[in-house]
Length: 191
Image (cartoon, rainbow, N blue to C red; front, side, top):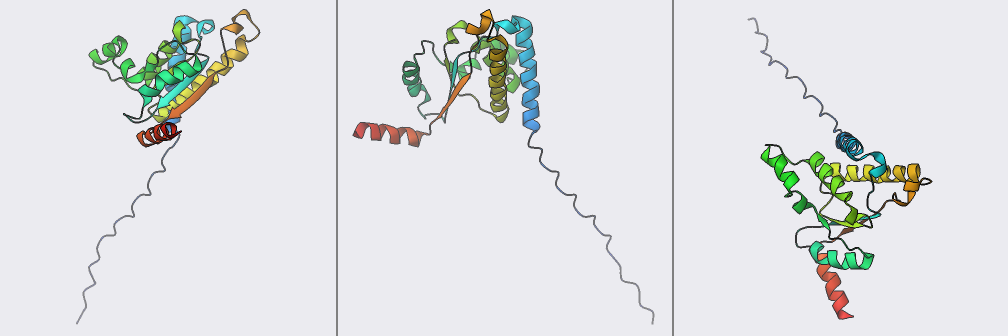
């Protein structure tokens, strides 16, 4: 008696290995976004007119963390006479509304563009508090690139008549969670 050959199942191909995650893709996007915004600023205003604040204080935290409460204290302690740039308000500005009304989204590029233009307003020359920025990795990278460009401008114009207008960038980051804020308040009240 002849035996039938065993029926074999077709082999399933092995699963393709997971593609490695490209961790610097956002950084490259940030470089493209920053480059486009910076070029626009230079074209509109001229490189010699790019006068950013001497000090940029980044105030981050969850809603209710006390950012608004701390803003007045920080501004007074730093001698700042201007109000903060509140990113959520910037996203509701006429410029942002025009973008939205045109059917576009206000993404990282638009936020960076709006923010950098605001930073150049004369009332912010001595310093400014940014409430709610950065919010994304791309925005963090763009901020790093801005600080690098501010240092480059300082080196370029330091020994010229424009040197007094271009300062070394100083950035500070303040992040509070509601728990840290209330713990600090209770400790301060106990003294």
